[in-house]
Image: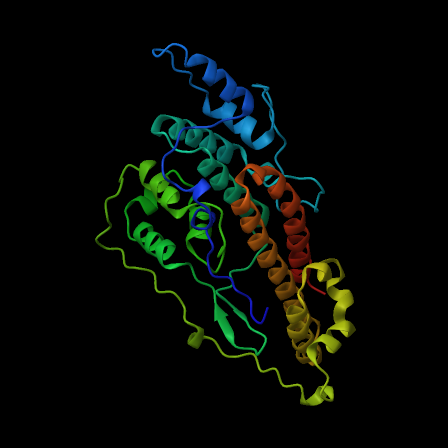
Length: 333
């Protein structure tokens, strides 16, 4: 990989099975079986509470009194913690409302699963990750994070709506989702996100006449990172990386050869500037890993949506490890 590709790859754009198009509602296996038995009578309709669906689909429990533990981004990394565990009480209440909304409108509940996943990613990285509108490629040229054309159009539609200010969707999460500098790769279908933003707003789809489209940054807005290796005796970046590999030892397995080459050069340039500059490179390494793992997660779910929970559990542990490294890189030397 020559450069870090952080263009938006929304899950719904990658797979038709998780598309926003309304489908028959599917819940847990036991819920599906119950619903199936009810079809014997045309007048019978089984409705599952949103909270029951939330507990079953996100926390694998049919106990109506279950109260799954809430984890926070300030906690040390914990193995086996699901992304959904980072949903706080208000998040879980709102997601429960979304499951009921999906049932009432014939929307595939997978859309709500993915929405909840992105909320979990937001909560697990809250106050940890920095806004990063661009990255650098191997040659040191800035590469701006962007959404695809369709997602960008929806983002701008939400930005210029009255609903942006009065929607029930958490405003911090919405800011996180609509800016590729925060979250360039997402699981949520933006068509569904827009439906939720407008549907849970007193303003509905009304446009704000005073709002203006958000102007995204361009690569030309940022200075190139000068990768001058004249002082390294002609050594390549991969060789240089070995000197600094211990700084990101826990992340090395997820860094590509191109990543290591680029990071080696960046470390060699940062070292004369002191530990503060070195920590910035540490942080960048963590961001690279987070980007790689998120892309793998999206691709994994797209390949087989039924494995969504297993894929999420596996990758979230790795994402949290990278997040922990990013957090450590932010602390004073």
